[in-house]
Image (cartoon, rainbow over all chains, first blue to last red):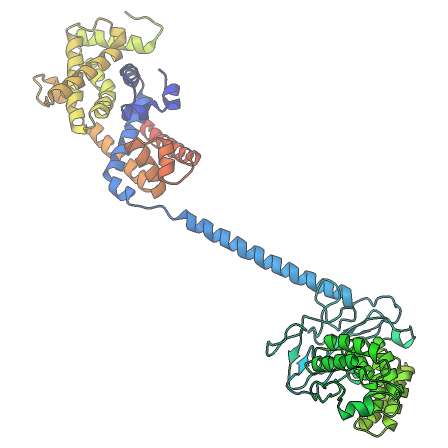
Length: 392
Length: 188
């Protein structure tokens, strides 16, 4: 046995714990008697042992710190850092997306018009506002052919174009869902919000209108807002008098509903009544379907055509509204004559066909009725607006 | 019989020869040479320092007596003879459990009384205690569990919720540190 083996195999410690067999013990002890160095090491171990035994109780009483708690802290901290970093990345990404949508004006296309419709229900109980009922000066209007921008407010009034939320009116989608809220919660199917007045702003581009140079011009924020206001449509009132029994129609209908030579069809009237029931409740899509059925039975009926055109406008299809409104206007001296011209003017405004809009508004203004003053006022505004555009 | 090859063996042979010839200094020399290892052995085997002290005296006296009487046949193996004597006496102690503090030999008093050695041992003990107290509690626990309780390093690691490697490294470092520090001290 030599010193190296003793150190290597911790024989001194094993010896102190009586873990050596008899032969190993004799050999180790014989080595100790010949080796002062190993004796000294053994003595040291014995001294250490003795001192530790004396203070064993004190040393055992100490508890190591809870390391797990520290590890949990690190894990929680790391989690928070990851969440914050991810959130900031998402926010940045969204900002970049917004910038990429709004910054470069896209190449001009075939006159995609802005369609803005505000409707006013005749029945104050059923009032729906699909989107902001008044134009916000800070609202951004986006169109393929034009854009109206404002950096003041990032708030949306419509759904976005593209993946990330953007500011501006959606000219591509049917109806913007993001900013529509149902106040009373009764009728959420058409994403509308009921208020004291039934107003609806639908931002739709159903079909591109014929391309014009004006449509590709850049509008300022103020011009966009002005156009929005001018083109906004409130639903004309309809006094619902209940379902009409067979062969007995309300006087109003008899008076202005048919053109001469038409024979009112029971089916057509029934469909019209159904349509009006839906119209009064603000279900313009349903009303439009009934009216389309009714107009097949009574193609020249002024009332059917008028409300069909109005429904199309309210649904955000100004181009589709022009034909029935023209028919209603062509019916002659009916109670819908002035209204037909007036709403035709609105439809043309939404199509940004200002010349036609001015003509129809002028026709409406020349007829005496409840819309005369409104038509005059709108005509003046349209003329001013057009003059401003022409200046550019 | 001096072999001339192993100085330790030659030394022990000469020492035995000198004791047998009645040289008092030689007996003192033998006692100085073996008292510490014999005490360490007795302390390790009995776990009682007082008993170890008594047993050390007995062992040394028995070896001296054997040397004087020429009973050590292989004098070159003096260490083995001392170890055998110590083992037998310690075993006898365990058998009888009787302390044999009294000795009839006159030399026993001289052998047992070494005030310088006692002072040195006390000083060494104090320094070791001081050194141990300077260690962290964790280090002291590692030493306690391994050197006193006799736990393996794996058991200590589990008990202290540490890795086996960490415990091994710490203990190795501590023992090396103590050995180096007090080894140098004892050489001065």
